[in-house]
Length: 287
Image (cartoon, rainbow, N blue to C red; front, side, top):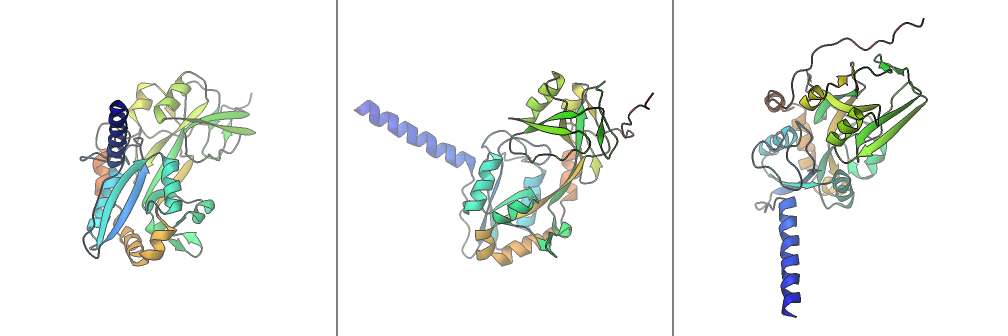
C-alpha cells in the first residue's frame, strides 16, 4: 500500500512539473491584463527556438522577442508563454484556454479567433510577420517551377510538417501532402527520393535566406517563392470580448513596430544564411 501511495505521489509530481515546464506561471499585477500566448513546441527558425515544452530564457526566437517587445511597450498587459503542439494551441485558442497565437489567415479560422480586419479582410498593415515559402527539390529532378506553375510531373508529392496547411501548387494534375513529424524528417524523405519536394522559408522580413540543412544536403531551393505567408496576432473570441481595448492596442502597435531589428539579428546568425540570387528554373525547350 505504501508503495502504491509513493508511486501515485511521484506521478502527480511529474505531471505538475511537466505542466509548469510547458507554461510560464505569471501572476499579473492588479488591474493588469494577462495575455496567454501559445506557440509550437518544435523549433522553427528564426521564429521559435528550442525543443519541447521548455521556454528558452535566452534567444527564444524572433517571434517571442517581438511579442515581448510589443507587450513591454504597452502598460497594463502581462505576457505568459506556453508551448504545445500546434493543433493543441489552436484547440486551446478556440476553447479560450489560451488567448493568442500567431497564425496565417484562413476563413475557417474566423470561427476560433479574431483577426485584425479591414473591409472584411485581414489588415496587412497590422500583420505580425511575413515570410515567403519556396519549394525544394533534389538536384537533377525532372520537374520544374517557373514562378507560375510546376511542369514535368503529373503527380507531385510534397512533405510538410504535421499541422501545416495544405499547399496550392499550380500545374500538376495531382498534388499530395505527405505529413511528417518534423522539418528534418521532410529533408530526409526528399534526400531518399521518397517525396518530390519539401517547402522552406526563403525570405523573412524582406531578406532572402536559406537553411544550412538544405545547403549541406545539396538540395535546390526553387525561386521565385511559391507562396507569401502573412502571420497575424490571432486572439481568442473570449479574450477579445473581455479585453478588446488591449487587443486593439496590440494590433495598433504592430502597425509601427514590425520588430525589424530583432529579425535582422536572428538572421545574422549562422543557422540561416543569405540565399544566393538565382533565376527561376525554366523547363527545357520541347524538342
